[in-house]
Length: 327
Image (cartoon, rainbow, N blue to C red):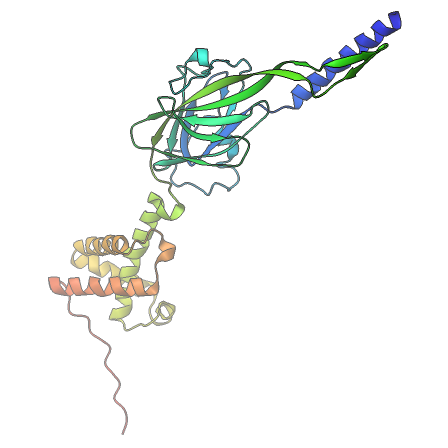
């Protein structure tokens, strides 16, 4: 008898240890929303990593190390006590398992779309997205599916819910044969569903800025275009066909003196160059100086010289005299 009790105690201890080890390896439920400019809020039950990229000059690619990654976008459910009273087509409250009442996860997207891209973790069967009235918009049961939030400048409320089926007890019928008990069939299991809800407040934000579209890149392109207008104008005045020939035919001082000659004669000449550059970049949708081509500089410089001549503040551009062929 004492030996039997000892064995039962040992089995119970091993069972407890196995449960502890299993629980330590488990991952709490989570979901990931992509294309986010800013995220804040949450509480002890709903964990997020706050971040704000609003004032970044440009937005690097998401896969670039050190910038956006899935941990920035992740919402993790740390609460263990869920509710057995689901919110059916109604706004969930704390009695339905709403985990962050009064502290929603605040999300601003790049543009007007955010993407519910991933979900996972242990201890749940179904994930759903609900609108602000509790209506189900999206449901997934383990398959890989995405949902796109359509947003505008006014915040919208959404809820993400998890459902878990818990086993209350398990009973397997058996038949006794002498001192032995033989299980019969698969047994009877009683289950119930438990639910939790996470409140999101989401709105549209600015569009993503690639480096080419950042304010600094546009300013660099504008300055490059303005300067090259003047350089190509100098080339035309001196009948130089290629930028590679400038240093062979003109000294840096000659180039500088010619360019500054525009400004000395009329300070508005630089403003004209800037105006031409701004209009040209806008009309041709050029946002980076690396997209400017030789043909662009030629076109802008032609317009620049035409406008200078029209003002009458410069002598018409004279082409170099052609050489007469010897007879």
